[in-house]
Length: 163
Image 1: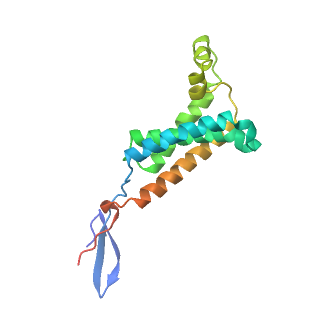
Image 2: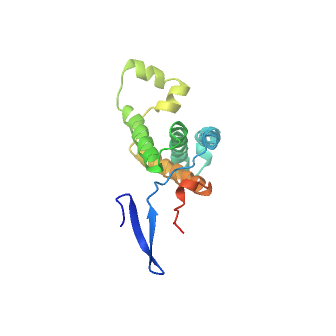
Image 3: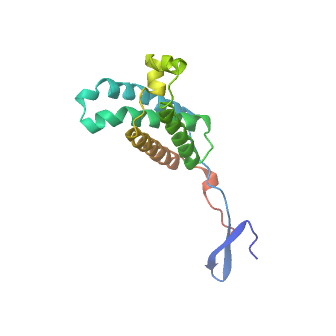
């Protein structure tokens, strides 16, 4: 009989093959998340600085896309055992909140945005197309995370079958 936390997957030689459900666990390296996030900082700054030398679409989207990818890996660093979809959701919410916060004008936040660091973190002007750039950056981060996490073996991902 199959228990509620088990499932029947088929028969072999008239014996029932039963496999226990095992949640897929992420094998995410914190060090790798740190390295990727740190490497994305100069790439994003270079994309911002040399925007005019890049093709127009790339020059406009690359800095924001790289920023969102960096934020993805920072969230992955903070919560290394969370599934990719949760990191994606948190990053999209955070990135979109930063972009929509640019619709708010007050002297104190405008003073922060007037600094170089404040402009890099908070931005200056709300542009709806930047939401697409953020989404692309999060997708790139999730894809890289999935590739990297899939390459790392995890014993909990393997199903066990009784002999």
